[in-house]
Image (cartoon, rainbow, N blue to C red):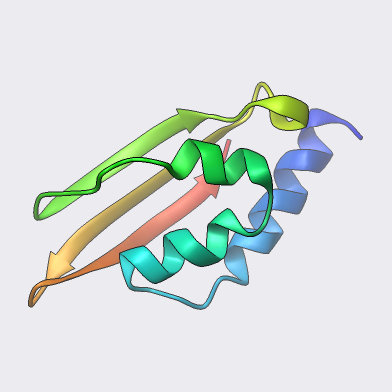
Length: 83
């Protein structure tokens, strides 16, 4: 499978994640592929933030980018994509 095909496949799966709260989104997204789980490990703090993390394994050469913000004490995912 080409890099573009992998990227498109992962982006299609990310679009299907229904959770908007940060921790729920991380939990659901981590189930898509082990490489995503590794890239999403970390401590998410502050009122807002973003990540741009490389993927490993069979997804090497791709990155996950995600941004979140806090509304009334609940962090929510604003955007996420694979590039």
